[in-house]
Image (cartoon, rainbow, N blue to C red):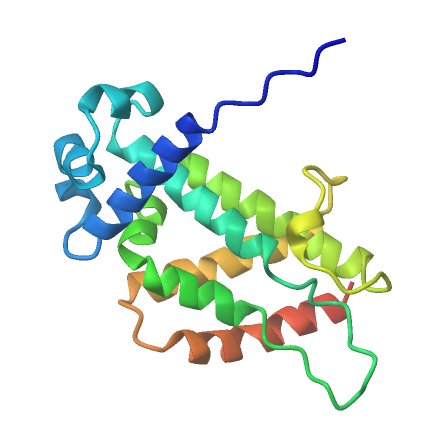
Length: 200
């Protein structure tokens, strides 16, 4: 039987190039001010290539946001797992989250705000719910990251509740104009997450 033909990597490269162009443009303007022409010019691509992958700028933004968030989560250690030595303290895993959101604030403000994307909010909520569930269920396993999290979990109201609370903190931080640093926000929020986990 012949080997299956490998997937063509060009569509993914095009999507990543468009996402990268959008992120660069967000450095000095709001999402609502960016046009398809702006993005294709920045990416060095044609408008037809853009429309091969996305219907509009908002769909591109949603894709860029969820893909970036998934990469962040995949690199985050499962926080319930403790190191073998008591004198070794795990880094606050929320520091990466708040740093990432702060660095991409224009994108998150547009997609999580009043006129935002239900798709993005639902995606983030589900991924964080799964992460909370894994943090409790997998505490005795070998140290690993959330890259191996399952796509679905049994209904777990507690994990869904905590995920919603964490997203709420992020939303309020953005709404208030990020008056505190990512490090301060992570330090203030992580004890709340630990307290919640201990009540499980």
